[in-house]
Image 1: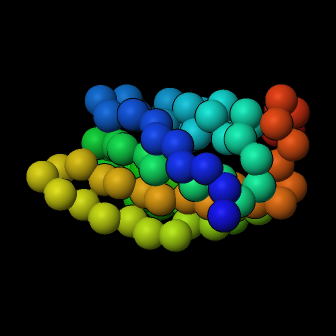
Image 2 (image 1 turned 120 degrees about the vertical axis):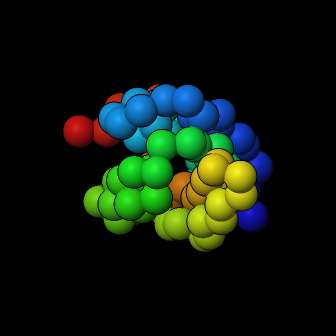
Length: 85
């Protein structure tokens, strides 16, 4: 299993949470876990859709007091430092 990382995307509105996830994952290794904290309700569908397109897994989504926490696993297609098309 890879390393655990967190990303605070609270108080950001679409499309910024997805862009921040993309930027963060571009520096991670396959198998790494990223926990993303968000307040934009759209991230509940936007981030999983981005993950499906880019080969990453959503391990879980939870919500508490208006904050979403998405737990992602970086997919095998990731090469750190390589931007996504």
